[in-house]
Image (cartoon, rainbow, N blue to C red; front, side, top):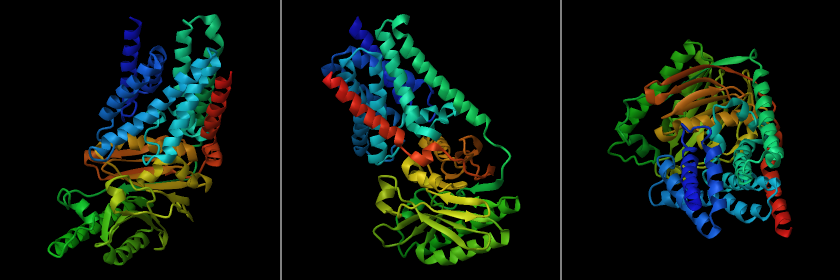
Length: 488
């Protein structure tokens, strides 16, 4: 009967853990999911329990990640195997290290291990921070504020620590005289985090400078299905070049005209999503002159997500953002430095890894592009530079639209930066420096423009100063704790 109970715990845990990665994740899913999984791995012999855990997690992750990872089979299943190994590793550490002592202090081993392997995956794996369970807590603004101090690692630690504490008090048969200290310690820490986060939000200033901004997305009806992809890949031959050039001209005109409309509606900043303005390399100078004219005549800042195509090159696509000020000057041009693995990586020229930050009448404006923002340490360049507003052009797809939108909120909180997120095939939005949503528009609903009044101004955060120090302390704590327990 006992083994059946552990098997049921394993299945429930895998299910809850799996759905933690969906955009509509139930916030408590990872908290309970890890607890059930830990209970199962502790109750079944390592020779059976750990392989079984790996198997059920692989099945769960393969199911829920379908549509999220943009790679074909069989590479998809290979990548799921890698993600599974990272997810199983903390359970292995817990099983062989934490069980050497029955004291409640060993409950720290599992969360230390989880942060350590999550941190390693974010720094070393091509997917960046996509597999972080911290993102499942989007919407819990008081808890999310912890990211301003520890990054997402503090949130991850609390989720894993809850699982470890619950499993420990379960093993102690919930005897209050035994579990009182660890239970009250955990409750006290969580209460402190939530109260402090709530106070931080309440004290957030609301009366500073703001700017009316618009995100103008890709127009429908110009290109046939797959045609934009073919252009981005530089597959344009002499027989259809005239047709492609005519369609690109219509695309350019559409963006410029709709930019004028939004500027006359009061927008002082207009942004276009990632690679929405496709332009052939030889036509780019002429197009930029038209864009400068619009910026000057309408007296706006124009942040353009451009896809400049070099036909005939091995990697034909320059994925960049070019920002023009009201005087018609190009204040920065930045090329994306983190291509999405797979198709984009195969066609895109990679940037130099230096994020732009420029002083303007709006304040210090910086930028990154889409996948760049999924690497927290990389985006910290903008936090260190005290950026007052970040413009983030994005190009998503339906399966990830809300999940990727939610991830942006954590970057705003970590660095204390308001963010204008201009998306195509996804959700455009604006966040203030505390991760609160100012506006959002789902472009799959047919709406091509989002307008927002965005508060301007940076907020100094501890994370922007110390970076991933909390994660490094978890790594050191895991090593030191493991040594002590193994020698005891």
